Length: 150
Image 1: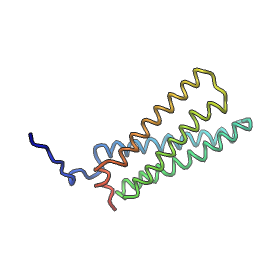
Image 2: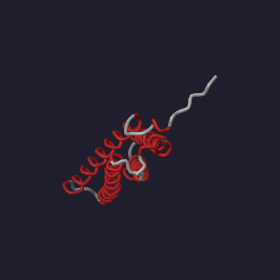
Image 3: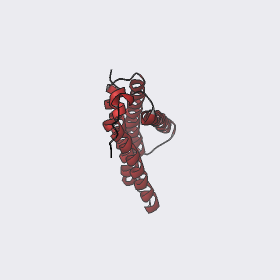
Image 4: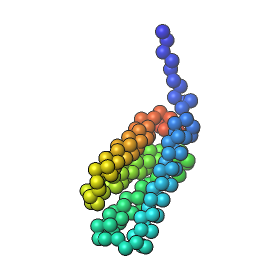
């Protein structure tokens, strides 16, 4: 039985899973910026207790960084720059950090009930799994390596 060889030169261009990852990064940036805007609004217009103010400030900082890195990552992918991989990975790690902050640490800060705790842990696991899959794709994909070369 003959093994098929993959021609690595065919695995170039923004298509296939790289296109899916690019769309994911776009949605990730959009969601992060939206969550950032909501927290800024809450901080300005709502009368929050001290731990609410501190929690919102930490969320704002993390979400601002996630948004900046994700948007810059999209730009670099479209320009086919090699640096896009490192920036995307940083954005994804920050996304995992925010999910941990919001879904796990937030549970202890705001003393949620059992159902909300299970929900928060479940959301963290789901977010972590999705972000980790995209992270692995950026680290190991031949298409990414062949396309992002400049």
